[in-house]
Image (cartoon, rainbow, N blue to C red; front, side, top):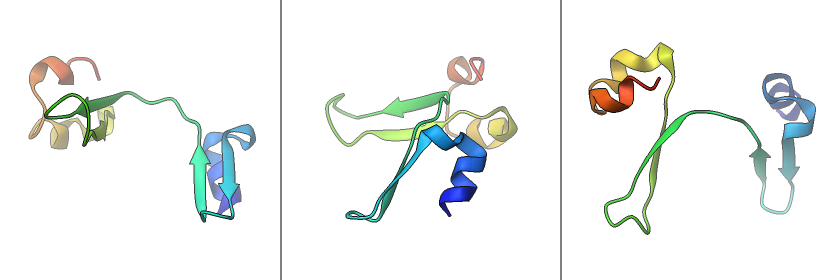
Amino acid sequence: MTQAYEGKFGKGNVQFNADSDQFEINAQAKVCCVSLDGLSNWKFVTLKASQKMLLSKVLPEQILKKI
């Protein structure tokens, strides 16, 4: 699995933590983040042009224009 992630994100951008059984991946992406109180319980949505039709059902046009 590590090799697949390295192929997509680059070898220097992928680290596997065996203690927690988790990957840490450094990647650049446009995202929209929402929290009801602005302090906790954040929700993240990756903004991809290929998903614009789906995103248009949940995000306002003002944000969709930035994709």
